[in-house]
Each structure stands twice: as C-alpha cells, then as structure tokens.
Length: 216
Image (cartoon, rainbow, N blue to C red):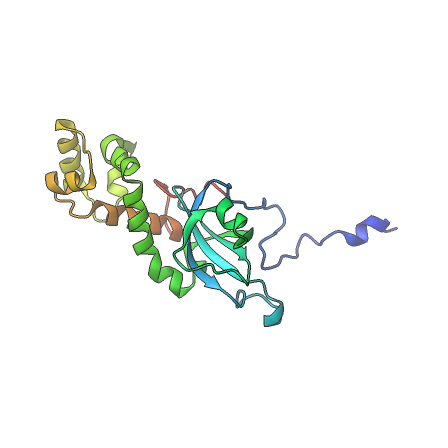
C-alpha cells in the first residue's frame, strides 16, 4: 500500500532544465567570488519548455580566479549589463542577480558569450598577472613525460626548455619579461586559450587553471 508521503516524492528519473538532477549537488557561487556577465538571456533559455512570459531571465557568467561558467537567475527589471564585473554578493545586494541555476560548460554558452570569452579572459589573466607569473616560474612535470608548460597551446619541447632555462637564470617578473626573454610573444593569450580548452573539456585530462571539473 502506498504511504501518503510517497505520492509527493519526485521520480528520480525525471529532471528539468534547472539542473536539479538526481544525485547531483546544488551549485553555488561564493559571495566574495568575482564574476563577469558574459551574456543576458532576457527571455529565458530557449530550451526551457515554458511560455516566454513565464521564463526566468538568465545571466551567463564566469567567475575568477577559478574560471568556472554558470547560469544565474537575474532580475528582469535591473540595469545589469554584459561585461559588468563585481562580486556575487554585490550583484545580489544590487538586486541584479539571484540564485545559481547550474554550472555550465563551454558548449552551453550562447554565441555572444563565446565571442566575448577570449577577450574577457585575457583581461582577467592580466589582472591576476602575479599568479600566472608564479605558474611560469614554478610549474613542474605532471608525469615523467609531460611538463605542465607543454599544456599551454603552442608550447612544445623547444619552448618548454627555453622557458625553463630562462627562469633558472632569473625568475620572471611580468608577462613582458617572459616575452623579452623567450620566444613566447603573448603569455596571457596562451593562458586564456588554455582556460577555454579546459572549459570545453573535450580530451582534457589535466586542469591547470579552471576548477570546472572540481566543482562537480
């Protein structure tokens, strides 16, 4: 005989767009985490099976410095803008963003988000320059045959040894210093490209910068 409370339990086989799938933990953004708005879906997500008037407006955002993509409920009446930056707490206090819907991957981004992402990442990598200089100065081998430096797009064996020899003589201090002393002309671009590869996740075994895999 069915117990009264059983009839109200959600069927674990069912899921909805909001990502509350059986067995998955609820996603959240820490209040002090910085984020940038990369696109606004004012009429909700096109995949959401609801009338347009009842859809929740959505913001696609990327957080820093952990480089994770999210979709977040937004206030329809706010003056929020694409490429606006601040902490999650600030956006909430200004009544611009609400609850996190879910963490997303690169393939879930809109065309606008994809077009802006490289530019946004390069600027943020520059803002966190000191942390990435530490990567160039202190990165080590991941396996006996794979050094972390070689995971950067375009960095092969020759470039790796060039970087290692230069940093052994003197630690790097800025991206410009890396460019001046090696043949790596645009370090911030390489890092941004690597972050995008990690967000795409196809064929990625090692994550250097994005915590998108860790947060599952």
